Image 1 (cartoon, helix red, strand yellow):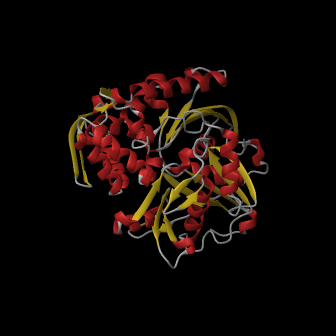
Image 2 (image 1 turned 60 degrees about the vertical axis):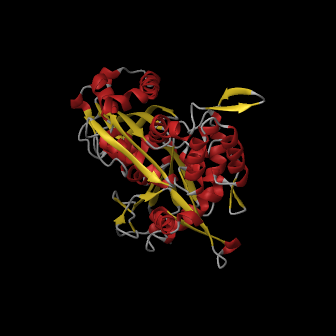
Image 3 (image 1 turned 90 degrees about the horizontal axis):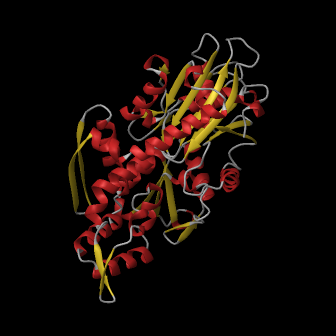
Length: 433
């Protein structure tokens, strides 16, 4: 792509699961930044970090990100800490810092390290960045009680060295702007972005090609339920019962149910790796001593000590993908001395996530209401994000809008493209939050 970087813009889709970067040249075109990873060249950069001890590194701790983080973990899982989905704690006041190899890391520390490694692996494409950076953000942050002001503060600190002129735009608006380039006539468009941590909606009015202002946002809405939550349902049903959930322990001469709080972090990808610390493992050892089924707690300890978060994540993701194309699939996980196998039907999985889908559907209806329109007034529906491939989600939109109005494509890259194009607009403030 030719052009002066200062005249263009950069779209940064920093996602819970993946991160994508697009560059716009200021002349109407944009392209994705690709990374030559250990095994392939790809524009999708995994939002993950791996830490390990190295005397030659700063503070004695080395770090990698993206596919390189995965490669480092696979090389030496017991001597590393693999951190993923850390975006989900951005708006959490209860998350202050994580201690890894004796060093405390705040969210913004994770973010800065991640971006530094991302730039370093871009083959020089990001060494000189445009002044204008358009950053995607969820409509509603993940978490039980998300604090958007805190999230903005943390994002600002994370991006302090990445760009000069920062603009934050709802992620589905980026997808809407990208989708608008495919339309040849005016339309009212509903965009649904199914990420790892959140599901977000935007209603946008798209004018005819060549209009001074092609897109105008009408309303947005979001909910902190998405791919990671669906993963949690699978872990809760297939994995945690093998690790002691639903079991009992003895205390003061009484037999009590093991509180579910013991298992909350294990089902959270952003916190699972952080359970490998002296205090947590000590507490679990004491629980194992008092549990009626100590072997179950031993299995949980083994998985934590053997740093099995990534293999478990992969097994869960594989099951979801297979259930998106087949009526049944086999779940199989083996690691840390633990083997878990089960046959899962698609309708079972859909039952596990039924309440989540209901909340997503309600959020969609509320977004339309905020735009003062009903489903009949929507001309096009654009679905993006990995979970948009789940049949139950597609069926939900078919019921409301009919299959003929629904479009998909660029599930992992459309937001970054759209953000970069928004940055090329004369006044991106129209889109910013």
